Length: 365
Image (cartoon, rainbow, N blue to C red; front, side):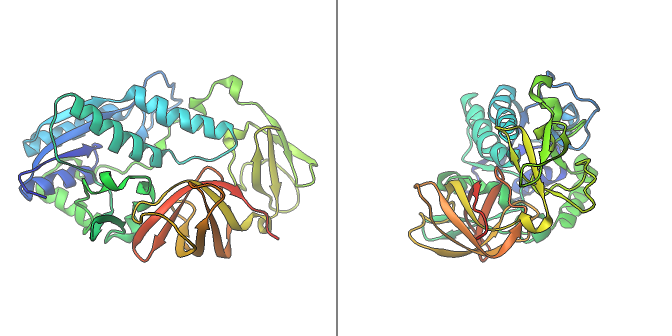
């Protein structure tokens, strides 16, 4: 890596990516700023979101990113990715919810949009750069000829969960300048550098301003029965898109005891509920597996696994599954509310081994 190389920084209009660009410039790299234009005003928000990645607040984010580039004296290129985002992220999100699953659009966006179409389209416009960077809190280390995705210094902000789908080739061309900084240190640096984004709030979700229902046609949101595990009707749901595994509130059932969503049967348009104890599982089938830091899985491997971003990783074993892109994930202790459509990510010490999509929950024996 030569410090005269050019680095393309994916700017979001927030403090993290702004400081990442400033640090790279300070280290002597040639830096260019890229901004993803993804908002499609065909989506009718019920209220104006101010803390989401996708929404009419994009104009403010664009202005923030542009102002930072002017302050730093680096070129700034807004890249139109509206079609790609709608086709790859929004349609994926919609289709998964309509199947009764709970997707994670941020993982798809990072892999396919931010580190995929954004860089491809920038190059197609004639921009030349050797590396790409972002404001993610993650660390890249090396082990002989492989690049390893590892946890950053700030464990509270660790974003490696969202990056497991990246390829080895891409990982070795990425720079995460915030890997050795905490969030408070990043804010402090932004103030010292006089960056306008220093006090900008973080995005809390990929979409807000009326909820996810704005992405669906009314004809797709069909009320139906809420049933127990024996098939007895206990109430009515508003549409399966409003429910997810583990949900307790908002069910509208007077059962005399707490009930939780156990699964969603999209084919029957049913939400199945039960007791808290029925939420726990020990064995899961994971599909679309990507081993980002190792060549592959030859036998069983002890790992720590996370089944959602805020899940405290748990001791587990992974072993080859019924097809080449699948593994069986077995927890040492049963885990609560493991949800089809979400991602399971595997760690060995601080290194991300890989991850995949939760496909099937095996019943407890």
